[in-house]
Length: 553
Image (cartoon, rainbow, N blue to C red; front, side, top):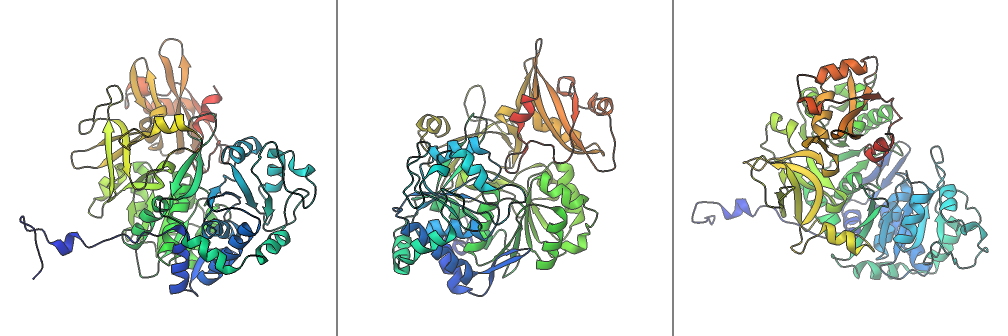
């Protein structure tokens, strides 16, 4: 007879899920042992089985050790989604080193800061695909002393004193760089058993990644994310909440240097699934790839990825008929549209950020389509949240907008080499002060209200930019809207909107302002509308850079 508690709850039903937490490299080793011939990574012109991914990653680890890097050394990785990127990520983990994924959009100034700030001992990059950017040129500009280094001599760069080398894993290596042949030669001196010894020495609370996030500060901040933080939640959810069938094929449209794509990729590898992606996002290529690979789980995440899929001339819901689980963060009108377009799929919104290694809250299975359109779910198991009032710092009542705080295994250990920023973000009780604005309903549902930095103060009234953006997006001609504050001598600041229109649609500034008047409070109505074309938006990895929009004023 099954045991029950005094109030009749079943022990077996409650204790029906558990975590199998492992260091990052062990996820790959385990899945390669269980599914050696299954595809781990699929791209338009590339497939890697688990055995191939394991073996290629081991060779990267041998090279890292062969170049003299000690355990816990920091390895920078600058590449677009590719064989080189994923093998470098796992190669660093196998060598018991810390991977530092570098944003492929960063320019030389930003990279130069991160290379020095992160204490990088090695950089792994590629020149396999230079259609968009030649990483060798960007790195040479970020490290001006690199090209003057004597061939074969140890690096001694004033701008990066700990850096031992920059390896081009694929493509030609200019002066100062190490070639693939140099790297392979270093690897050959290291027995495979040395990699296994390094892997087995890794602890769950060791730092797995340092991921730099721009936020609102002048320089990026390096989030210290341990192995437990980056693997436990993604693998647990991939094995249960996101599972659609025994062998899921998961598509991710974003770059793997971003936590929004890296976390689901880790979940896929940890559960023996197949991850499908591309070097870059193109809606037509993505539709072809998802149809070809029979994708069951999709992570379009943001409107900038999801909207082009739906608006593409070749879009047909039947091409994505295998979709069963879809993760996104989008305004209600877009969520409603996709839920109606794909009635067989479960659409889930979520809360997440780099500092929490991805998701910390998620839609529950029993939520209605209406709830999924307007809210971001509830905290995931094992993670605590609370919302505090902006003025008093006291815990907010139900439905009151305040800053959301997060505590639990997913939270970063701090910002690297930045004790003052760490102290601002993490309090003495372990709560992460996110800077995100949320309200929590009486039933626990969380609703996002933008960033605290996106809260405008118009004549003493608080205006959440996201509220105005969502309303503008309900106009049939508006594809994307971003609202920022413009300085005003009388009201301190006033809202202005940047808008991209749907293809084939038209609307004037006067029309969009009139659309808002009488429907939202007068102080929330944009005072000006600036039109943007596709491709003109200043972007971070996956989001519009509002700092750049504000700078236009």
